[in-house]
Length: 315
Length: 229
Image (cartoon, rainbow over all chains, first blue to last red; front, side, top):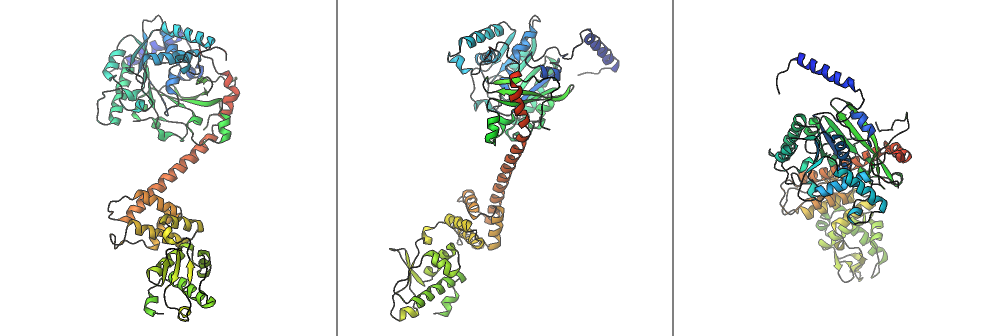
């Protein structure tokens, strides 16, 4: 916060353009979401310094599953910078989180098969390669002490990780960070849940703006189900969380979220469902990314369409 | 027949009694087999009105119930009896004593009998808000019809919602209380129906996307270490 003259701002904007023109590119952020998400990268133009991204979906849609594919790809871009991708995992332990990231990178459909020791030789090799790869990436964790079950994960503030611990963890050497998920941060200031959520949203925005860009995972309300493409107002706890975001990613699986599917609809999405990643940004506009939820591989995949084809998104 | 006593009978009970007397006079037999359906046909009343009228005649001492055979005996003096005949026996195999208020509501709904529904709700009201505790708050026909309108015309719906919503505590304004319960449930139902309808409408907008998922899903980008499946 301070008083700035427009002449200073103009000078900085000229410098910004000069630097950009030396290496012109459409995805001009300091990092991107990885090669698996070209449309998302194109739409967001990558990850930009000091921005807060909120990723939200209705419960059980798979936002953590989607998010787990992102940190290793971003960490790959941090190699050699001396900085780290920092993951604050409050719903699961570090082992669970890294197992999930490796399973996603290896395309293993059922991560339980890893713990059961029942991977095929090819899957085992892919899993080991993914573990080795992640092990060499600059990634650090701040985690809860144990895994939470579905109900525990919905209890507000149900972790031993406080905001001050998060602030300290992110205060130096951070390339990018991920908080999964914000409802579990403990010991928050404020009276009721809404006030606490609002205060936390403000604090997280401050960390992103002043320290480093990051992504926060949160829920959309159950009430928002059956009401079309979700918007900022659907974010759980307080729409302040959405207003604080520089980038808002809303993950939607319309067939999963719908309770009244006909037998024909169930047959239609037997193997894969359409998924939509709705994108809103302060600076880069808005749009939608066409993805699928693959029920065999159990994961989100961005669909590459032939040239000239535009996905038939609902209006 | 005592003029004073007859004047205290309801119209329906009077119709039933009249039907019984005619039967006695016409048949002049010791026993007359009449089912509830027979009485419905002869009186033009609904089944539950026959039950209620039977009850009223028993309470009034016009007829007596034979508990062994679940029959109703005509107890009052009649031309048939005075001429040496035995009382008429009216079988009431579905006697009202075995019918709960819920059954009354169900029967009224099945027969789509508007007055029967009102009577069933008045029964319910008497159970929930007895006259001794609520002397001034009887359920009149317009109020019963109003409740039925809120609940989509089903007496059973009113019954189930009201009985599950009213506890044992004393309620100061039972009609307002019941109306609030019914309106709240009606709103919940309407919201659920609207949500279901909007979900059904919503999914229509996604069917093309689902077809594209199948058509182009194989074009999705592979994970970094994914092996060919």
